[in-house]
Amino acid sequence: MKTVIFKVVVVLVLIQISGCSKKSENFATVGEQDVTVAEVNAYLAYKRIDANNVELAGKAAQHYLNNLALVHAIEQQDSVDMLRINAELSELKKDLLLNTYLQQYLEQAVTDTAMRNYYADNQQNYQQRSARASHILLRVTPEMTEAERQAKYSKALEAYSKARTGENFAELAKAYSEDSISAAKGGQLGWLQQGAVSPLFSAQVFDKLAANEVSEPVLTEFGYHLIKLEQEPGIVKQSFEAVSGDIRRILRAMAKDAELERLRQSVAVTLHATSP
Image 1 (cartoon, rainbow, N blue to C red):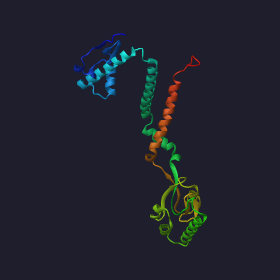
Image 2 (cartoon, rainbow, N blue to C red; image 1 turned 60 degrees about the horizontal axis):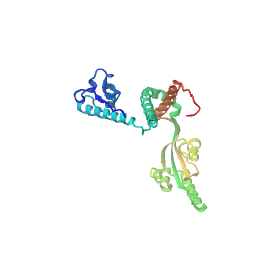
Image 3 (cartoon, rainbow, N blue to C red; image 1 turned 180 degrees about the horizontal axis):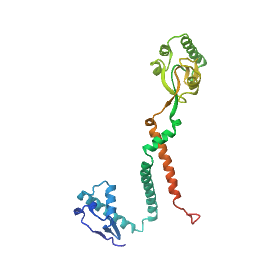
Image 4 (tube, rainbow, N blue to C red; image 1 turned 180 degrees about the vertical axis):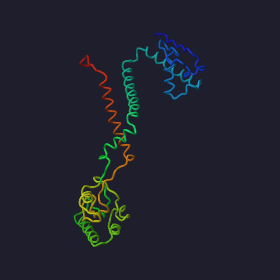
């Protein structure tokens, strides 16, 4: 086995590595491999070590060179499968290179201006039909007998009859509703987005009821509802700030796919064998 020659051509503790004017000049020789100032500075930057701190930078550079010497010595051993190691190193390098490049590229490609332009050009995606409603719920479960279900329906009809004769819906909700959260607020559900609730419930709110009208009992998977439309449906526009995160993800995905395709097309790949 060759003797490893390890010659440091500068005194580490007496020189500020970043002060070298020629980044390409040799800093050391490890075996037959020259190590440039630029390589050492790159290592220090990776380790977040201030090159102006002579003592710390010197120790780090010494550690870097020692490890290079160990690698050089191990590479000479016949027991090491260098083809496999190089294949793994190639994959690690590829992943690191790709991730670093894309991170830098996407930071420049997806700007605030690009996001606002996308928002302006796709307004239809950021408008929602919403309405304000209240309800009274009599819960029904699959385990109930038909008699129990009928009792719930009868109670719902009783509340509906009182609402139809002008009794206060909020008070009826407090007295009848088994949705304790909304009942405490007089049955109020607040603003509902179309499509965000049960289709049967949504049909009443967005297609059938007029403002302040109360529906007959409507059966959904939760039970029997009496639904009051507090305010008719209208279009509510989502602000840019509310959807900017989603837009950033969309634009980054689009930019990533386009850039990867551009990079693939820029390099020709020619196969010279039918199998590995």
